[in-house]
Image (cartoon, rainbow, N blue to C red; front, side, top):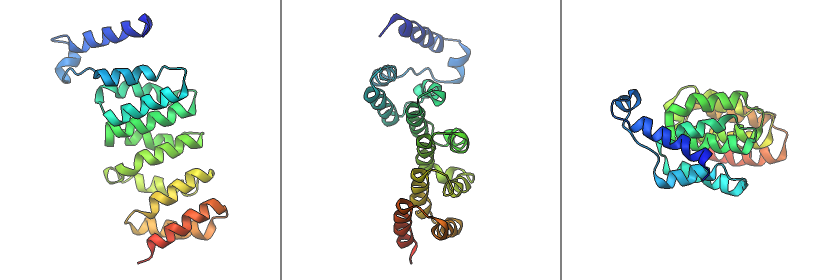
Length: 191
């Protein structure tokens, strides 16, 4: 780890742990664990696999102390990094991440990132009434992979609006790949 990376980290830990600091009074002073620090370091690697592995470790560890660092990657120039950061953020913050995920789903240009937002929102669906309409809107996404993911997610929801949206998408879908996923979804919807 370079001095450029270590010094700000040491300053952050000293600031947050300092008795009487504003931050320490509002939040229990918890620095990232050594495993989380190792995963955070992997995010800076030049190796794409190492970066992906770092995000997956952070997603699995679910340490709230890492969320702010992960948020910095939401606007990274590499869409893979943005996608990984959304998934990790959803796992770490849970319902708190819903606004960020919904915004990415609506505004993100890269389909892989929109798909990551969908996957991050899936387990959080009961947390917000805004999620189901976003899922239904994703059924009309211009990207095939995003539509396939949306069909899979929406077809598993126990809501009459979801069933109606799947039936409507089934009538209008022209892409063979999406039609295959829709065929499975239609079987799932049968009583």
